[in-house]
Image (spheres, helix red, strand yellow):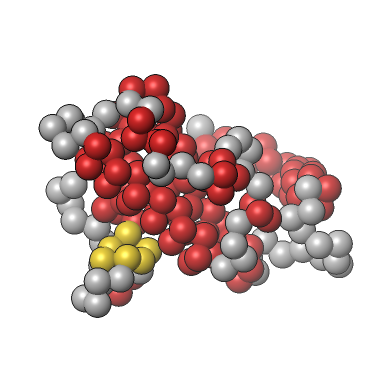
Amino acid sequence: MLSDFRDRLAQGDRADGLLDLMLERLRTAGLVKERGRQRTDSAHVLATAWELTRREPVTEAVRAAVEEVARDVPQVLDRLVTAEWGERYGRPVPMCSQPSHPVARLTRTGLDARDLLGCFQECRPRRDLGPMLEVLRQIMVQHFVVDARGRFRPRTQRDGPAPGRI
């Protein structure tokens, strides 16, 4: 199925047309600067794609968990959620409003997730995590680590993969 799609896309330079359309929309959104020829294999494009694939699941898990907590036990959010949370997790999340460094963005989202899970467990110690909070907990294990110095940070290749049993 995928090979058929790839073959159809390759006919008549459709891939270039699709790339041109995508680049035009990215320029309109202000995500790509007006330059000469764009390359899809550049380090910047690959780094941005990598950052988005790391940050998006964490951000969406935080958003879903906040919605679940707001529905089930809203008092948990009273002491946690600020206007900054609304900016970070309100829909849509504009990429340009986040801190400029990718690790800082991911770390900030992870700290918010850690605070949300901790606050929920403090306020409701005997209550099981809801499905979205459990997903968030699992994503936290996969994407973050507390290093030997006790610092919370995004997981890197040096840390190895997340534990198999979450």
